[in-house]
Image (cartoon, rainbow, N blue to C red; front, side, top):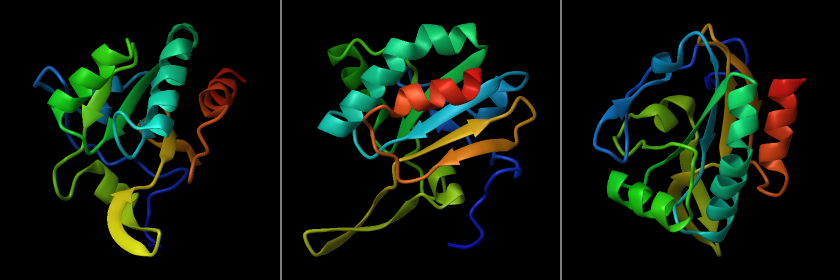
Length: 156
């Protein structure tokens, strides 16, 4: 997809469901920088590690004045169980709707595993400025050390 929003573009302001049954949208974080980490699926090894790593660093993100939000297509109920099971402190949101934020960003895409094609979340992280514009994009993220790399980028 060539028209994917990138650095300098405004992040689409699409509502996401919270585990508590409410909603959150990127504009709710206006006046502060925001890290959005999109991941494939709750309760899987890589996604669990990534959410735990961001949770462990949340106090440092908070000290830097940067909000963090984890997003997948999992249900709000599954997010709630995931957060409880792993004592996650980073907030999670559901992007389950067709035409949601991950669709608008072009990161809900066709993937292939063992020769089978399916739709899935491409692990991607966005740093969004207080003005709502994308400052940085990490594509096809490798989990190990990623949260630390993002923290270094927002702190430096």
